[in-house]
Amino acid sequence: MNENEHGAFCETYGNTISNRILEYLMENEDLDFAVGDMAKELKISKPKAYEIIGDFEKKGYVKKSRIIGKTQLYILNKEDSRVKLFLRDFKECLRIVADEYSEESSCSNADACKEKNYVLARVFLGNVDITQKIIGGARYVVDEKSKTYY
Image 1 (cartoon, rainbow, N blue to C red):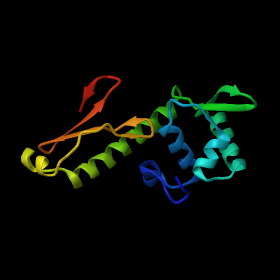
Image 2: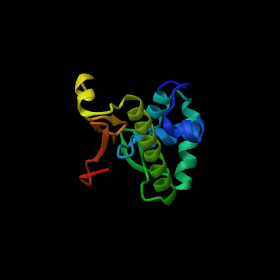
Image 3: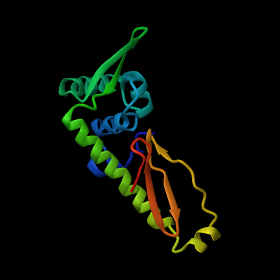
Image 4: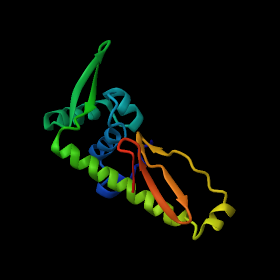
């Protein structure tokens, strides 16, 4: 992701460095990360990345997970009430993007879908499964963890 690219969360809440870091953390919510690696991927300075992660740690958004060699790794603190809110909003932003995309590309009936040669595939944005199944204009999003469709 370059400095001009941002996802649905930043598009909605503002393309600030803090929001870009939050979005990165939510895209990788189950993975721990090194601040330097995150800074490199987001193309922000390491000092600024360390400053923001330090602030996020004080607020309880991230916590230290483990040390590899001399590198401290952090992970998103999914028990924090604000992080839960961020994650809910992040997933809602993804749902809106998926809805907008499916409206642009959906077909009106099953025959039209066959003519367009739709392919069913698993789709991930970060580590969030946004798989869509389009059949006759109907859309189902699969939540693998709870085995629910909505």
